[in-house]
Length: 300
Ligand code: ADP
Ligand code: MG
Figure 1 (spheres, rainbow, N blue to C red):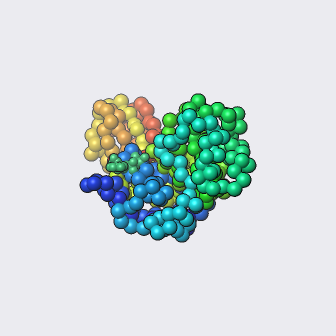
Figure 2: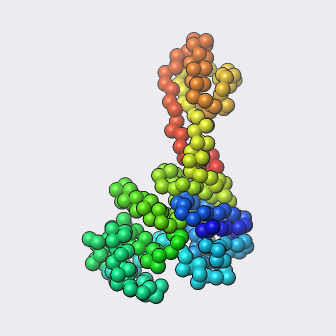
């Protein structure tokens, strides 16, 4: 097991930031840690990386306990913190060399070069970190996190603040790295986990509300279809509820209704209903069904 979190609670003063959190991450996976702001993502990541201690429960990384064997844990873990604190006055190479020194890496010069190649910093390698774009700073952050060749990478919102091109580049890079390492990345963007993660753990208000293969969560979201239908006349919610296959109905506007349905073919029943009641269906729109809906349902 790469990461094992058992019944972890974290209390800041009077606030419970994590409440009895448990999950496991197997080696070789890219796992998305998804949740709204303030859900407890960064807190969990700081505990896994030995930056802060939990109030209760146990956490181990590659079999090492974070409280009992923090040095061993740190050897196995690379960490990209949320606000990627880089030394802006240092040069890229100088900074990576410095981090290599902290980890007492042998053959430092060669390793720094290797990291620069791996994350695509060749062109920027002689610049000061302060002069780099956000996308390139994230690359420096990734290089820093991987310089000691850890088995596990913890990336806290690695793509926040990037423009669409940078976003794609960094996601591609994370996917590549994920072929060799176990990665846990936090995000509040559902599309991100759909794009790169094979397992998704959703956290809300300090509690785990879902933990599944991303594909299974997507499948689940597809089985709850939502239709937005506009008729030309008014009708009643009671009448609409009787349509076969309709689970729930909500009025969106005067003549516009939102249906939660079981199967796609319920659309036929809605058309037939309209005909029987001498109404016309002006528009029928399938709402995009993605992890986003699962996320919304679980976190609101
Ligand atoms: P996320 O990363 O999901 O946005 P955080 O783990 O940063 O969430 O925060 C979870 C909750 O704990 C928030 O309500 C936050 O205000 C609170 N919190 C985080 N760090 C501290 C701290 N050092 N002291 C007090 N409260 C904190
Ligand atoms: Mg955070």
